[in-house]
Length: 198
Length: 198
Ligand SMILES: [Mn+2]
Ligand SMILES: [Mn+2]
Ligand SMILES: [Mn+2]
Ligand SMILES: [Mn+2]
Image (cartoon, rainbow over all chains, first blue to last red; front, top):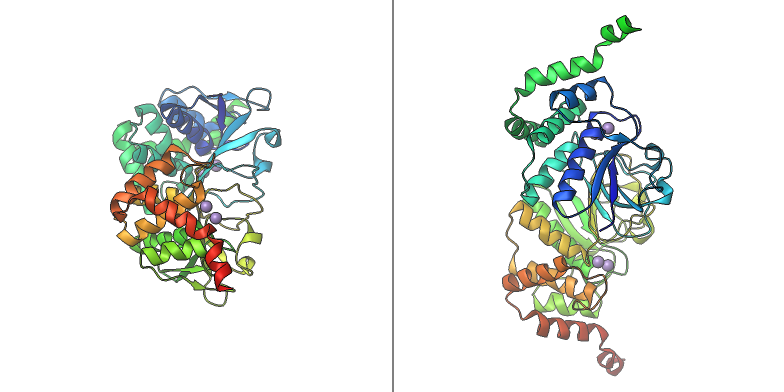
């Protein structure tokens, strides 16, 4: 099976990075040859989450067609939010929680969207359905993404499924999700450190 | 929860009719207020399957917006294959096995597509995942749809999942799927009866 790159949208947020890592891992367990990459460097919040759970930031790509023939998209579907040469590769899989817009394919594909607060919530369901164990570090990144997208359940896009996912993932990751989540959100909005450095 | 209509494409085939019936039933078990309808009368093959399993043909609609605000699409996504006033309703759910083309939404939705031989195969997976029992008659229609779309596994679009679904559904429906499937496919191509009647 030919290698495929898995990535989220440009200007990646925590869900774009975490969903790429967790979906690449899930598809690898299901037999695909995948690599999680990103369309940009992690922001401060994502860097905090990656550091906390000991995961390296995914390699940043500018184009995909020079490496692979097919890709898997997470946390987006709109071509203008995707890799610059998205028109030159086949999209084989999408996992997302946004509206569908300007997304067209020549062939059938795997597409999974649900109107929930975070892509990582859908991925948690998919791990459950395939009965694949989530590694501790990946569980930590997934709950980080859900806390980020839902602002610790304060966003109106939050659903009961997002809460259920965080509770289940926190057990696997072995963290107090409220304390950790507040610290992570604070790391993302903490401009003082940046100002001092500048 | 407001009522939603569930339907397949224009000039419905057995999958378009069977998937509407089985998805409407599944969503009803999950708490939605659904009615399976159709964008045309059943063809000869579908009429044979409905008659065999004792299910009435779904009501035929010309427009949807006069009845509901939101709809669920099965076995298609392209607006030109859908109800005439598709632009005037919200699409809340799609279950399909075709390419995605000209399908755009203003809001997030539930979208589930897989590159398998039949929509009813995906629905079988969804019943499994939700652990909802499939009524005998609906199981019969679902296996009819898979046999129809895959031409009893002869079509190159056939996947191992389609075969697994038919074997499982045949147990629930209590039919010999090979004998039944050949008779159903024959009913759909049997022009002699029609010629005699004409
Ligand atoms: Mn995002
Ligand atoms: Mn997201
Ligand atoms: Mn069809
Ligand atoms: Mn079909």
